[in-house]
Length: 191
Image (cartoon, rainbow, N blue to C red):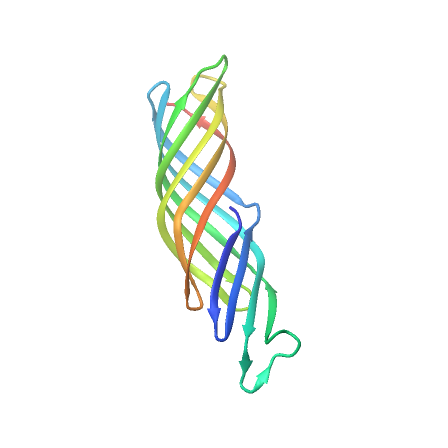
């Protein structure tokens, strides 16, 4: 996942946060049908990443009869942000295989839904603690190697994204674009 900018308004000022995700864990289970060079599959996935970053609150103007000194009438404070984000997804994907010697390169695309949860994302007070289900998609490419006619190993790259997740920060609605880049390694069994 990548950087997520947030902004909002507070009494007499603004609120800005830039949330960044750290490398996380992703687990996926897939069941499908192999038509030869085309595969169709249903996929359930789970991904979790820790969140870091900073949040800055800037207060402008006067508070009561006090004018903020030496700051052009404003003051700001920056706090570290922590928490985590998790995504549970259900996708239908289609893959096209290309047999090249003993390996099988392929491309894949899929669409479905994802439930995104921001969990205890905080700068000392909760910024986001909510979940939402949205449309999602993924594209990718990989290569598989068959050890036997039934057992294969697979390594592939996926780019996945979730349609605009809307989250409030104070009184402002923010559209958050969530995407991730994943390298997956797995084993497959054909019946």
